[in-house]
Image 1 (tube, one colour):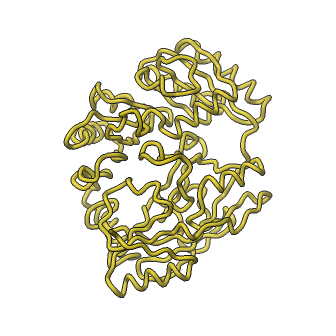
Image 2: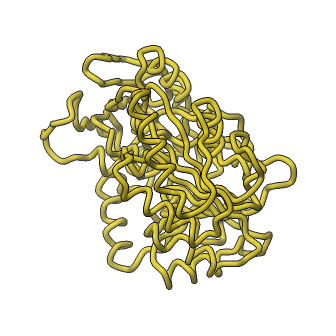
Length: 404
């Protein structure tokens, strides 16, 4: 069983990394462990458990800025923000149900480290776009600081953008500063029923091009629609969310509904049903690990106009959800020895985009490319970046690609 180091503060993290470096021990960097099953299986000597680094260290609602230690539960931060009618605008999804974990177990460090973002990504951007500053310990055992507590910060290289999405392979973040934004007063969802995947992508494109300021657009095919609590019927549903002040939402939902009537039968979900629906989308409810739904799960990012083409090129036996107006396709594949990797990679190579294996057995994740394989030049650049911050491959070695 892998031994665990549990630091209490930044100094403990620095000392732990330096000790591991001196003793040539590799470290698995972990918060609450809610995303431990993501990426390639860990093959490290020790686990660096950051759950003890918890707590909000700064929150200034008037300045729209929050700082917290990396192990702070995301649920705690969201509760604090909600009390001031604010939010993390990138609306991070919750991988918990899809990975057999309870909801709300993620930490702010893990959220930023894998650059999580949810349905509002098409309007507000990803976690990295709201990441203002950090303190971290590199694989050299050195403390670095980047960014600050204001949006317009030009102090040196923007290492925050580099660390967001690095999966803990470059350094151990101990303190994180984020931009927060006011929460919308209300929301509503316009639902277009009965569309096939191609027509749904066309409807979403039209909605995103309208003046209605759509904050999220998803298509839920009929084979997954029954899993969503907010839907009135278990049929294919193309859902378009508008948010903001109540008078604005009232005007925009009617305008959007009128513009969608050329695409299909339209209904409107008011605030309560809308919130339930988008909660289920953020939690990937059809793919939760209960009721025998543990199929291999993939996440494919592509151009919105290509989403339905990639899905059609894979297999009709797969279960799909289209988010980001068709630009993000969640695919639950039938059980196969390679978790469907051959079909997925072939479709992505032909139509463009990149695919990540979200859920499969440890043996499959060890034998299959979990992340999109990099071209030689990009792989060489990734390796040089890794070795600049972590020359001994101390931190999460091989978590993304073998040898990195």
